[in-house]
Length: 78
Image (cartoon, rainbow, N blue to C red; front, side, top):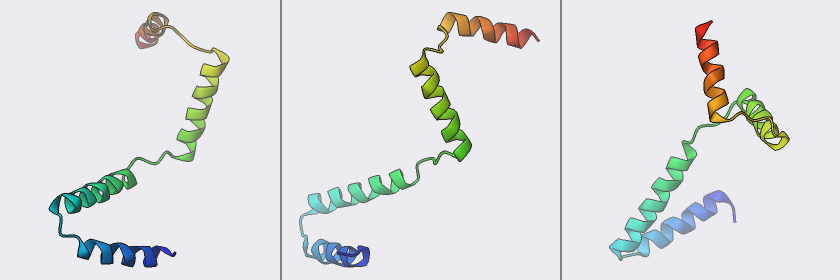
């Protein structure tokens, strides 16, 4: 079934529903889908950086919080 056909089928079924709770749940699901559609999309550069970071974790290239704080303090002194 194509997308337009699915939409029409859904509309037909929704029109026949008289239970307010079911209609409220349908609205909740539609709103949830809309919220997901508005999620942030990573740029190509961000995706590359994320993959590199995950690879660093897999390779054990990590710093403890204490070590990272010391590095940050040194960097801020410059």
